[in-house]
Image (cartoon, rainbow, N blue to C red; front, top):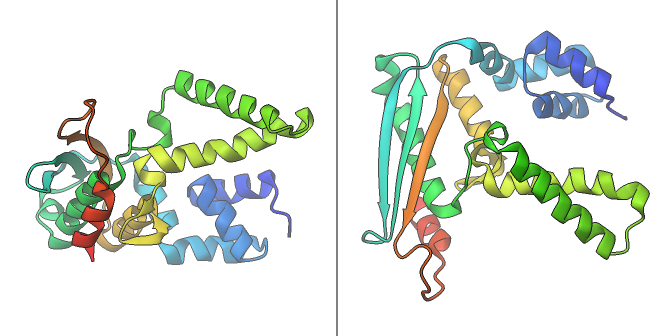
Length: 215
């Protein structure tokens, strides 16, 4: 069944869930609005969206050092109460996020953090690539929109496949935690340092090394 933009909009207004989650819910339920709303509630996604307006000013800053000091990560994850900040499940999530950042080297937390000029520059590059591939002008713009999703997946933390469960995005894991704990939780910011970054050096696959520690 073709899932229209108006259907996605209606479900979003009913549940406050994200656009991608609404589209997935409608696809999974063959366009049935009621079943799609139930699907989102069962997954905890509607609940997570409703908590988005709350203030999350507690939380922790987690540090992760890999490979004897070759990669270092600091990440701040916020929640609503100090009680949750001391919760082992919450802290485990923050640690996993720090290790994920070490492995994947994202540049931004979410799509909203990407500067508009960076997106326009990337779209221009992708458009030129599509034209150079001989694609018809009339379908190039649609191709660019599809390929820009890959850009977000590569560089935005919440859009990346989670290293411990690549079938899910980091945002899926985050929303699941929100549903379990019952508070707004946000990844606020992070910084990643890599020894010798920007200097000429032997190629090393740090992602594989970090992944071994996650298994």
